[in-house]
Every structure is written in structure tokens, then in C-alpha cells.
Length: 386
Image (cartoon, rainbow, N blue to C red; front, side, top):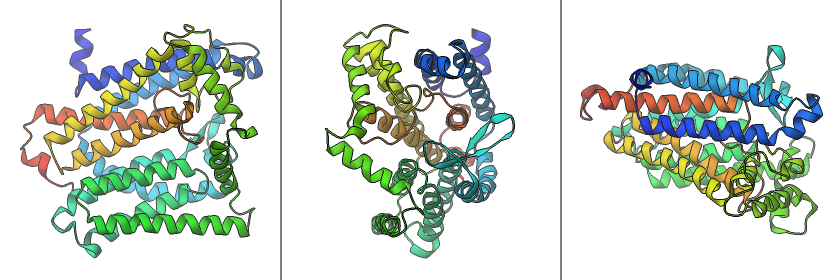
């Protein structure tokens, strides 16, 4: 045990949070994929658990490798990756495979798929952290700071929007939070919000005029309408999630005893939190929320040690994005928000989402590792990335 602790660097509490979330993930995915196993794997209920276990282990490996890299190096790596991510997003819109009635993934060999928005999210946050650090001296200037910061945000969010509104909204909100923390003029931030609203209105108008061009817009509208109309037939999955939560009570029905996994669509991804509450009760649900809150709290602790530094912007951007996504997923499961299709980071079954989440947390650990090795006022830590 001591040997392992000596090998891993950075914030040990974040490592513990990740391990606990991984254990919860493995148990929840195994329990919630029973119906899937009987439908596609001839009743082999271990198939999806083993597959997910391999994905999680590889994710932990990616996290470990990422945390070994000095975090300033990521600035250069992802500066190039952003200009790879944008063409990939464009390519996905035209030749991507359908996932939940939208073109979100690119096909890979051996039957694998790649969700390009996962790459785009991380690269855009990295770009913003870099630009906010480099432009601090002119951060209030519209031409020198705001324009080069906001253009990639609008481009990436616009390319993600047709297939995945919720992901685009989370990324847009994360960008606004980063810009606010980075001291960008509030006047410019509000103008960016206005631009976002105008783009959304234009998309709705285009969708109404040419329904086949943007079919997902009708889905967004119907989800919002069904959220307000409790009698809507489209509330089936939400009603099943509420039944699961009600059955869970305080201590739950214990692992493997979920009944609603047989009725909930996507109980292993979008509504996995409802299955967790059904099996582990209110106590289990609070425990999961608590883990995400600890992750955000530890990220804030890192930020307070190096304010307005590349590592600080990077850490808060990544952590806020992950925790914000988790809160939205859990809010949908308990019927506080309309259905979005967002997964629960590090818990829901998935491939690229788990791996990019692991890399993201590895980057946070890389920042905390450098802070542990050097004093907070070290010149190298304060310097903007080249």
C-alpha cells in the first residue's frame, strides 16, 4: 500500500474520490445492465461488467499517465488539439453515427466509436485557460483579449449544438464562468450571452422553416414542454426514475435488487443515479453528491494557491465542467430538470467519456503535484504558458 502511495502524486483526496466513484460505477453498471445482457449477450450478465471494468482500469491508467506530465506541457499539446477537434466536430455532423437520434460519434475500427465533443470540451477549456493567463495585462480590452478568447468558444459550441444541446450549454456556461474568474469585462461577458441567445433563436427559426435540417430542435422543445406537462406521455422515463427513487427509501433495496432497471431506458447511463438511489437509498445518493462536492472543493483549494495562473484556470474549468455535468444528470434523475441525455461522470457506462474524464482529473492532479513540489510563489508556476 505504501509503495502505491509513493508512486502516485498530487492530491491524495482526489485520488480517493476517483477510486470511490469507480467502485460505485462498477456496482451500478453491473446492476443496471441485466436487461441489456439478456437482450444482446444471451443472459451473460458479467459481459458488461467486465467490459466496463476494463474501461475503468484503462481510464485510471490514462489518469496516472496524465498526472505524471508537467501541467504546463498540456498548454502546447492541446493548442494543437483544438484545431483537430473543430474539423472532427464538423465531420461528425455530416458522417457521424447516430447516438440517441443525433450524429454524435465517429466510427472507429473494431466496432468502437469516438465522441468528438469529449475531445472538444477538454481542448476548449485548455485553450481558455491558456488565453486568460496570457492576456491578463489586457484582459479588459475587447480586441486584444475578448475577441480571441470568445471566437473558439462560439465556434465549438455552435458545432456541438445541433447534435447535443445540453453539452453545448454546459461548455458555454463553463466558458462564461472561466471568463468571469479570469476578470474579463462583465460588459463583454453579457454581450457573449446575448450572442448565444441570438444563435439559439436563429436555430429555432431555421428548424421551424426547415424541419429536416435541424430535427433535434423539436426534441428539445418537446422535452421542455413535457417537463412542464406532468401528464405528457414523454415523461415515461422520468416517472420510472421517480418510482426507483421512491422504492429506495433511506437505505435502499441493497445491491442488485433494483426493479426499475427493467423499465428505465438507459438505466446504465442517463438515469444511473436513480438506480443508485433505488439500491443504496437516500444515503447512497447523498454519498455520491458528497464525492462530487469534495472534488470541486479540492479543485478550489488548488486555485486559491495560484490565483490567475494557467494551472488555476485549468483546474477550475475542468472541475466545474465535470461537477456541473454531474449535478445536471442528478437533477434530471430526481425530476428537477428536463431530460438532457448527460451521463454521470466516472459512473455512467461509456468509453470515451470515461477516458476523457480520467484525463481531465489527471490534469488536475498534475497541477496539484507541481504545487506540492514547489512553493506557490515560484516564478515558473506564475508564468503564463508559452
